Amino acid sequence: YYMMGAMLGRFKKCVIGLPGGCPLGPRPIDQHIKGFKALGATIDESSPTSMKIEAEELKGANIFLDMVSVGATINIMLAAVRAEGQTVIENAAKEPEVVDVATFLTGMGANIKGAGTSTIKITGVDHLHGVTHQIIPDRIEAGSYMCMAAACGAEVELDNIIPK
Image (cartoon, rainbow, N blue to C red):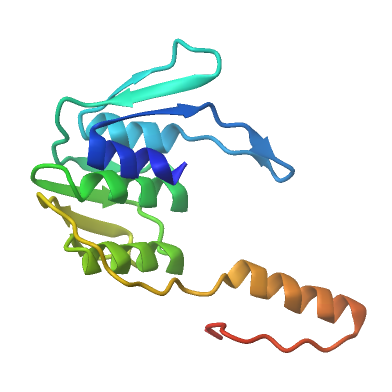
């Protein structure tokens, strides 16, 4: 679903299939939608299989997330970097993945402050440019391997992890 924010920021519209869930449970996107609406987008949910999101223009806004959400924080950042003015996301997720996306976008020319804290401030820019970026290692995957090794009483060597 990160394509929603990226496409909304770049093209001012997107059509995306409705979310399902996973074995862990439902994956609601209400906080994503709340953020997009605050930026000026309209949402058409009349189709039983997809949703259309579009905006004449995106304008910065103050957005308070009702619950901390990594996905919503990232999706709103992806759209807000191209919005006119300043966007403030409060109750933002602080996870390393949010910081990494902010670092990536900043490398592309975005103006993002506060990633890794509960308040992120984004000043929209007219253009982004290409950048070479190495994404951070997947901490959930690394933790899963460690737990499996511990459960089996085995050893495992993990490379390219951030041990914090």
